[in-house]
Structure formats: structure tokens, C-alpha cells
Image: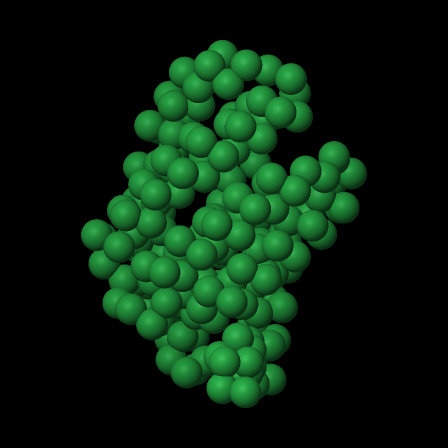
Length: 176
């Protein structure tokens, strides 16, 4: 019985549920505004994913990431591929592992973004794109490595001040 209790999602009060729903909507909207093509894209939805993982933990973060990926695919009309859902889940888990109930530091943000860059963006997402578009992984890697060398520092420079902002910290205090 105790094992089952540990597997349950943490309970959310009304304010937390509304906040989580709002953040999901914001992430869906931000996910639609990306720059690039099918091989290289940059957007700002990662900020909200990190925030959800930080505020609500790994279980809610993972569930939210999966739901956002599914709903986002439905809204875009694009093809659904379970690999990208797994990538979203893993990214959220990495954020939660490093940020949930922990202080935001440059080190944690850098480690999170570098792990996501290496494991999710370079390995998994490149594999998913290669499978979907019948392209050789080795043909995709050079441009994806270049993209990540440009995008990852930008993401780090955006994520740290975003999570440390007084507005975000104030909302987090209200949710606690």
C-alpha cells in the first residue's frame, strides 16, 4: 500500500491546477512560434517546460510534456511520432531532476541544457528525424551540431534569468 502511495501524483490545489493549465496553454502557443525548418527549429516553449518541471516536479512535468506534445501535434496537423513525445518526457525529467525543489543556479541550468542538448537534441531527435524523413543520421549531424552550438548557449542565457526573475519567484511563493 505504501508503494502505491509513492507512485501517485502529488495533489494540486485549485491555484496550482489553474496555473498548470495556464502554463500548458502558454507552452502550446509558444510551441507554434518556432523559427527554422523540419531539420532545425528554435523556439521558446522550453522555458515553460522548465518552469513546469521546477514548480510541479517530475511526475506532473512528464505528464504535461506528453500531453503538450500530443495536443500540439493534433493542432499542427503534422504527423505524430512517439519518439518526439519520449524526447519531451525526457527533457522534462531532466529539468525536474535538476531544478525541482532546488535553488536555480547557473551550474544547474547549464547541466540541464547540456544534457538535453546531448541526449535529447543531438542523439534522440536526430534519430527521430532520420527515421521520419528517411535521411542518414550522419547527413543530419553536422548541421544539428552547429545548431546546438548556437542555440544551447542562447537557451542557457534565457533560462537562468527567466527562472530567477522576481515575477517567477513571486508566483512560486504563492504556489507553495
